[in-house]
Figure 1: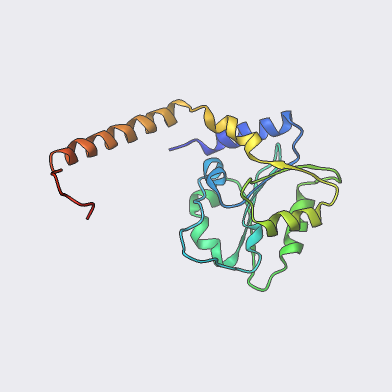
Figure 2 (figure 1 turned 30 degrees about the horizontal axis):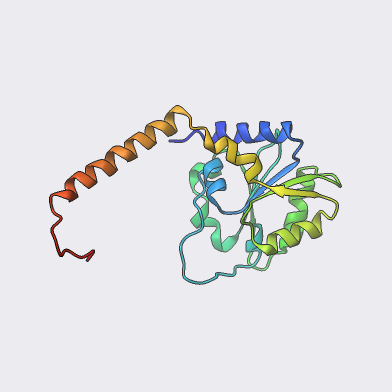
Amino acid sequence: MPNYNARLRAVQQKMAEQSIDLLFLQRSANLHYLTGIPREEQNFGNTMYPGEWLSGAWIAPGRSPILTVPRMLDEFHLDAAQRGAGYDVRILPDAGDSIGLARDVIAALGLRPGAAVAIEDRAWAEAVLRLQELLPEARFSMASALIAPLRAIKDQDEIATMRKAGAITEAAYQATLGRLHHGMTTL
């Protein structure tokens, strides 16, 4: 199992080194990498929950992350492991004020005017616009500049997992090769 605490400490250390005051990650591969919170479920349309734009993690150097999520997504996205990981979880009620909740989080993190904010590269436009509205003097950057170098270098557990996945894939190919014949379709 990945060591999410070590990953979080590493990204917070990089944030401090690069003078980044806030990292805001919506549901994404980056959020999953840092916390284990699953990515968005697959669907064939666009869901619209009140305040969904603030679903994600608010990470500052030297502090426990604050997770914000609308009530409609609470049970699906946050399991007991994340709830017990020392995160400050804040649930937006169905008729809640998403801007008010975001202001509370910003205040709790002690963000100052002109803060440096790294945001998920594929963040929803609504999230970016709301954050710009809430932090008009902030300097925004993309989270990938911070996280990609950390994700590129694998630790021993990640390497072991990749080797195991490779062995499983190779075994599946070997088991399949003998069953293939001319004229066979993908069905």
